Amino acid sequence: MTEDQSTPDDAQRPDGEPRFSFTDKRKVNPEDGSVRPSGGTPAPEGQGSSEPVDPIDAEAAKLYEQAEQGEAGSAPADAGRVAELEGKVTELSEQLKREQAEYVNSRRRIEAAAEVSKEAAVGRVLSALIPVLDDVELGRQHGDIAEGTPFHSISQKLEEILGSHGLQRFGAVGEEFDPNLHEALMHEDAEDVDTATISLVIQPGYTMNDRVLRPARVGTRGPA
Image (cartoon, rainbow, N blue to C red; front, side):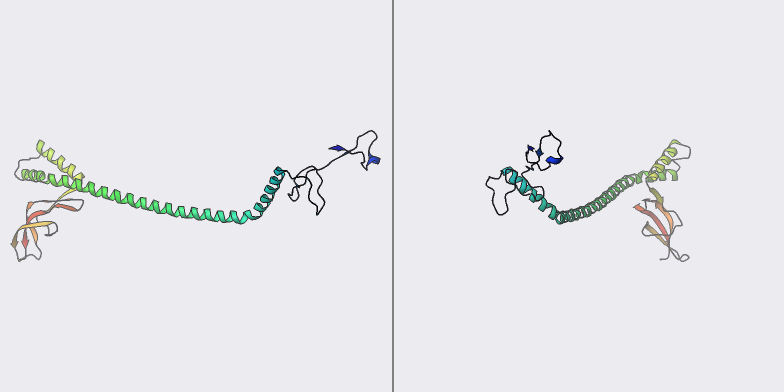
């Protein structure tokens, strides 16, 4: 702000007040971003500035031009970047779904294999106890395990516990012979029947959850 003695508004200025004028000394033109020559007054058109340009002003003008150009061309670049990121998100989402499905399938296979291993282990234990059950059955047949005795109570508890793990006894006189379940150790020909039936149970059979641990050893009667 400088005092100017030749202000044309003297008629409207009260007496005694100083005259002032305002000069724009900004070195970068805010309208077009060009660098103004030092001194605050633009150089005449077609004539170069006699004073050197401040490097800071030149850099500011350059940054201004780059900002304007960036604003003009940023929309397509941003749109392309967004499309690229959306494609990447879709790709990663599909990969995550595949990995989750693979994890679920792997977990099911592991659980199924563990269940098969567990059932096989229980089957081996039950098969090892079948001879003990044979002795218990022989003891009943010979009257060695009478009802009301401690041995009778123990044998019942043993059979109940093994039954809770899926062990079931099968094979009785009068049942139809099934080669998948029964092992015929002897046979009696009979013309009065159409199918072979069990006439004697030598050893009962045992299953665990529909799996045959030992076939019933029997004698049969039926057609030759």
